[in-house]
Image (cartoon, rainbow over all chains, first blue to last red; front, side, top):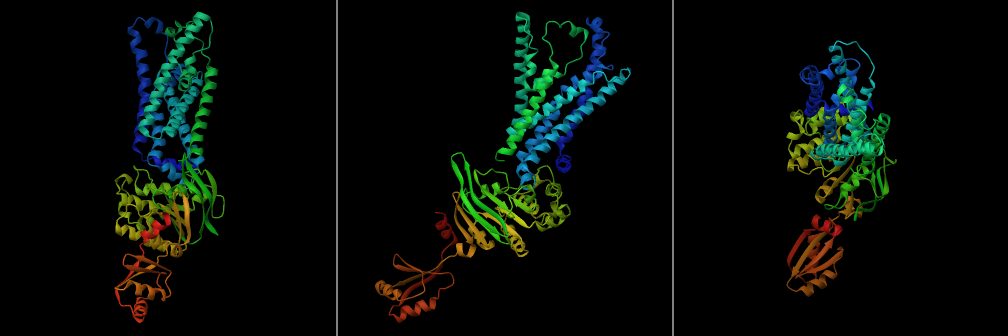
Length: 274
Length: 295
């Protein structure tokens, strides 16, 4: 696999889109967390919610793990876009055929893409850890690993986004079209998710049936549903209205979706004409 | 040892049969031409051999073994179009090919020089002309000095000098003992370069063997005289021709290549009381032969 990854590195190390999107993501992680940090610090002090929120500091240890993971989750489409571009480039330049002609197996071709998606998720997660530490220490609180599981959820979400990107890239093959499908899929899923969530609330209120937030059972929303903003006094007001968060079910579903995405993209490359 | 053996290979695209049970063997050290008009299944067959297309049925062997990717590393293949990363230079693209093949990294300057791309080795692939792209693809095939080359329409897009250079290169490689499998729709190219040929027509193998046997062209001698009846009678006494036809007010005699002796024919007619008023030696065009084989 190291040999295969070296080839992938040769492909991307001089690629402008890779450099630009990576820089955007690194910058984005810092900026989005700083915005939330600033809002919480400055805005709530001037609003009626200030009394409720005065004691809430999302970037103190141990909340920093969850807040940074949640906030960074909003820009995970950037590494996913990169995966789409890297995969569809192979089809655009027909190098997917040439790589196999020159001596890779089909399995090696798709496996190295899978590992690239994994590495991109690991790198994103490392960035979250560094940012969470910086903001945690910047808030003047002492180090704690409580709530670090949210970083694990972040990794799962990042990997899911990258795997969706990989699958769409393999199925659609054309860059512009694949990017459009990726965002349309996000939009459509979010819309259906909202409807399912409303239905979940209705079911709980009217029939006392608590199936959890059913919107979180959709592929990308399962990953989204694992990451929430830390519980805070304002959020506490809604408790009792919303369905229960079945985190373990959502996590299992998320893993099942990952297996499905892997199987599907694998199958596509292994079994069809290239 | 055979380099490639294809056994009853079939490929269907929905209702279209692109290959219909093709079988042949490529002997080691040959220049093997796969000849056929556009859409005859040449690229489809090479695509199957390179594992980028799945056969419907049939099998093939490389180096007498059921192939896997390690065998492809021993072959320099250029299939259909030059496929490279557009945003990278020739040098960087060849570094990727060498890494994929796990050999030939130190061979890059040599192959670039062979195809006259040394001066442009640092230019992006996207800035190359069609001919330069084609030459880079040939360079990529030559990387690491492989024992077998598979070239699909290698002279496409090249100017006449480039075409001559590539043909010369193929001949040199053949003299070095390499096996070259070349698909082409250009009969003239196959005749000039190849030692063996397989001819495909709509996915079917219509001929296969030594190029001199398959593409042998008869010589045609056209004769005319004022008394055609007397000419015909004289010709019936003549020996050595393989076929005779009447074409308008001329008689056509077919001779195996290189066996025609116009002087003998003229003397024979004169000795039999016929004075020829028309006599011409014609070569059957390669195109005519090609049409005969593929129609």
